[in-house]
Amino acid sequence: MKKQYEIINQILAYKPYNEQEKADKELMLRCLETMPDVLTRDNSVCHFTVSSWVVNKERTKVLFAYHNIYNSWAWLGGHADGESDLLKVAVREAREESGITNVAPVTKDIYSIEVLTVDGHIKRGKYVSSHLHLNVTYLLEADESEHIAAKPDENSAVRWIKFDEINEKSTEQWFKDNIYKKLCR
Image (cartoon, rainbow, N blue to C red; front, side, top):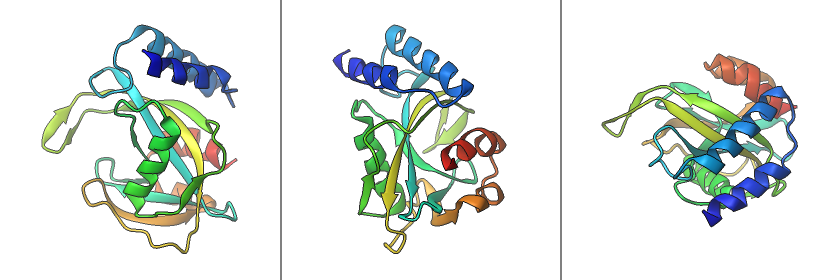
């Protein structure tokens, strides 16, 4: 429970950017206060995930991966898997999913929050029921000249994408309209 208090305090301190974040902040806090195991996938209804909005030094491009499950270009990230230091998870996931080694937080503060719906799917040969990701996003920076590489068990490609090309690359309309546009601002 101590781990959850750390996250509760971080989310309480977060100032929502818009109506979506305000509503999602309230839902996240309610889940943290009332549900067990929201830091692990043991909670099959909802659990915490972390996304990494990795930008280049000029703030004109973002590092995206072509995710095998969703068949779309998307941001980097993953499950908290019991870790309460969500920024640490964001950096680790960015490294694992893209092959970059030199990635650093622009700030230690939360950059964005969102509750994401996940449709049922097959992962590593096992069915995963539909559920919610209580997602916290961090703003990270990396050098776009650094070597990048796909992580074949999760994605089939990684590349830097200009902000104004995100809508062409992503096939997930809700993300394009409600998340990526917000993060680019």
